Length: 371
Image 1 (spheres, helix red, strand yellow):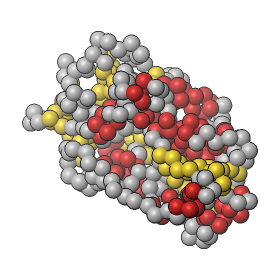
Image 2 (image 1 turned 90 degrees about the horizontal axis):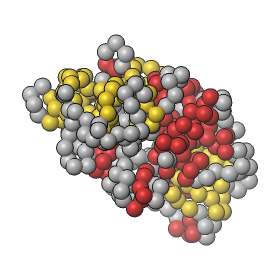
Image 3 (image 1 turned 90 degrees about the vertical axis):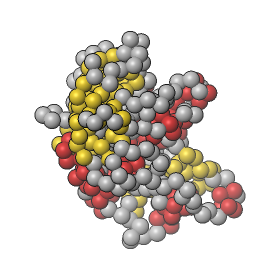
Image 4 (image 1 turned 60 degrees about the vertical axis):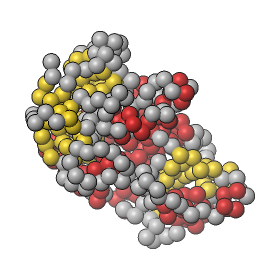
């Protein structure tokens, strides 16, 4: 039967999120109802709130949810009620890229994750007046006490690790680590630089250490984040307010980094990340920007040293395999992503977003117990 839930809704571009009572519909055959215990706050939530991407409003945001399976549709076999799960991005499962093992590049990625509806255009949410509310953000809309997810984007996780710790694995942490381990394939003995040391950049730095990179450079303007980067695996840091990052990276590496990752979403920083590369170096792009944003590059400086630029989504992760791998690395003490997290109550969602944007908090996690 449909149930009453509390959700954080954005109704106007750039507006504050408001907690409202909604009705959550029954799960369809391949859907899962998840009681949310915690959810991470990600930069993409603010991107959509501010309508830098075109996504319909009113909308329930949230896409790093973790919780307990409450009910499953008739054709769900991956999980059963009572399972602990982390939720990740949504994919269709039937397009060429999904079938070939790259669901992060699903041909239906935009409508399934940013369309505010299921693949068939329906929504499982309505407000107290009976009006439909857009949901299914990243196939979950986890800024809510309960969420409708899919058997494709729920990952069963061990019950002995707190869900409030695991929540951020579904997007930001997966993206940074996957960019290094899956997409760039950073190799042992290589050099790597992360431009931006938020949750994605710091996850990438930890992953570069796991991969065996021997020169790991963190670039940021926030001193305490650079200090944390050193504790998590960086061998060098650069504050662009104090030094030219391109010159510094060339000095640290003896000519340029083998791999760079642009995490800030700023075109001028992407230019620096490309210019910092060695011959045959590769720059990955994970920083989300406003639609239509362009960057200027010196074509000869890309062509002649055979530098490569790679767009990366969700770390090209097969989440059902990759998230358990990250959990095992955490157990071994090799991937201490818990050091990035600060907890907030669900009703502090706007404060958590503000602290994320200001840099005061690296990875806010909303807690739902007691709501």
